[in-house]
Image 1 (cartoon, rainbow, N blue to C red):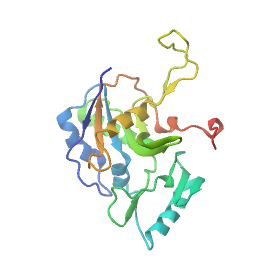
Image 2 (cartoon, rainbow, N blue to C red):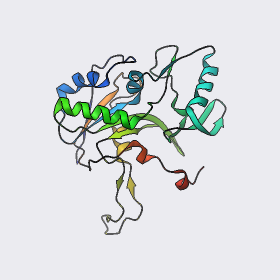
Image 3 (cartoon, rainbow, N blue to C red):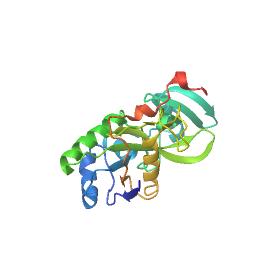
Image 4 (cartoon, helix red, strand yellow):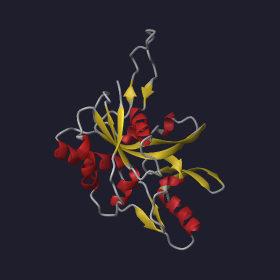
Amino acid sequence: MTLEIFPLLGIGLVKPGDEVTDILEPALQPLQPEAGDVLVVTHKIISKAEGRVVTVEGDEEAFKRALVETEAVAIVRRRGNLVIAETKHGFICANAGVDRSNAVGGTMILLPEDPDRSAHRIRIRLQRSFGVDLPVIISDTFGRPWRRGLTDIAIGVSGLEAVLDLKGSTDWMGRELEVTEIAVADELASAADLVMGKSSGIPAALVRGYDGPRGEGRGRDLVRSPDEDLFR
């Protein structure tokens, strides 16, 4: 399998009330989506379009702390100003996903209410426009326990299996795999981020050539349930 990754160019500032697919379609047009393509979209433009933008009132740091508490369903850890929280989506992340990067001055951006639903809506509308079923991943930047640095992961998925279950298959030595599950949606999101990034002003990319199984996976499939979590 050979992958190509194309940044979607020409996407400008997104405002509350904008229709995301109307913004994505012109940028996709030169690439002419085809079977085997996957669209990755950063959550920021989804959140902005859906009105998940909050205007700061009073002291910015105090406002952010209060907003994090509102967005969190549980606080997992605190260290100084850093809060690791669980969101209502089940994500464990810094500051419950409250973010100031790429936000207009005096505002903060929250996670989409339902990233899976947002991904599905975009997928259905783009299918009507281009006549091809184009899986959609909504991504966000997360840290990882025990690893330095940040990477993009999938928080919303529509049109492909988010987790590729290899249990029961064999490795190249013929040994049966008993526990292997591949987070393919996260891998695709991370790969797409290589041509996007926070400073580039490119909020979406098309991954071409992915031949993994389609299906009705969701971003929630990637969230480990509390009874399987050994570290909380």
